[in-house]
Picture 1 (cartoon, rainbow, N blue to C red):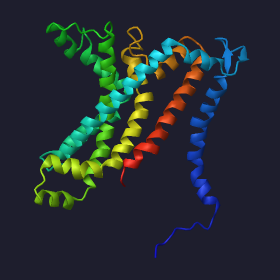
Picture 2 (spheres, one colour; picture 1 turned 135 degrees about the vertical axis):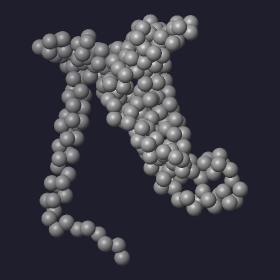
Picture 3 (cartoon, rainbow, N blue to C red; picture 1 turned 60 degrees about the horizontal axis):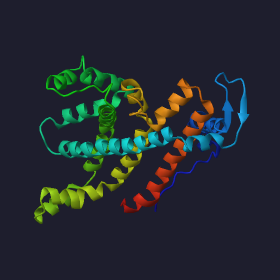
Picture 4 (cartoon, helix red, strand yellow; picture 1 turned 45 degrees about the vertical axis):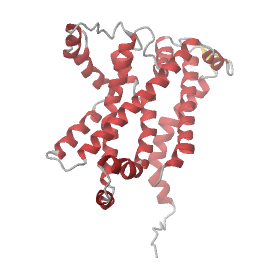
Amino acid sequence: MRRRAIFKDKLLPYLLLAPQLAVTAVFFFWPAGQAVYQSLLIQDPFGIRSTFVWFENFQIILSDPLYLESARITVVFVAAVTLLAMAPALLLATMADQAIRGATAYKTLLVWPYAIAPAVAAVLWIFIVHPSIGIVGQALRGAGVPWDYHLNGTQAYLLVIFISAWKQVSYSFIFFLAGLQSIPRTLLEAAAIDGAGGSRRFWSITFPLLSPTTFFLLVVNLINAFFDAFGVIHAVTQGGPGRATTTLIYKVYKDGVINLDLGGSSAQSVILMVAVIAMTVVQFRFIERRVHY
């Protein structure tokens, strides 16, 4: 018979939940409500006057070719960052899970990059890839490669994708390694006795048993790629050159903070929030069906 914990004091559970509910209300629901309200207004840059215009801001944004271009840039950016963050993390976790010498040191070193803030990670990579002062940048230019992400939009785009993915590899590595260590060794040993090779054991046993971890990391990495890349883009390219690295989250910042279009910026943030929520719902509705717990 399973024992169940029963709180005699009915007020205690609500008191325990109150701090987290307060943080969620203050830092999520209230700002989200403010964004929805401001998206229905047109305000002057000084915030003195505001006019209620219903959905005019949304109509202007969705018909703006610059916004549609940023949406296209964001879709490719998010997909690339998620793939480049998860695939190397799974490979590194598989290697670190083996009985190799110094495995503990490898695991510790691989986790460290996650402790670095996105903007700090971007600055560190600037010192490496800068065309004038960076070691890699100087080497590329010395080899005859016209490397300058300040002028070349493709190079800038690939660079921010790489830095954003590098930052997330450590996070995915932690969970993949934990998932691998929770798989019973007896299953793998039985498959090895039956003659299954290492590749066959991984794709037939290990990877299917990692499906809950993979699904969780897919959701988290997609959301982080939408929002967490702001610090990298702002530090490295500031949305340029041109608009090559202006993702949706950075366009919200440029239109709201720099151009002082508060209503349009709020409308963009609402669209982005709805898009991310819809994407997450679709993932839980369809992709989770293939996950076996």
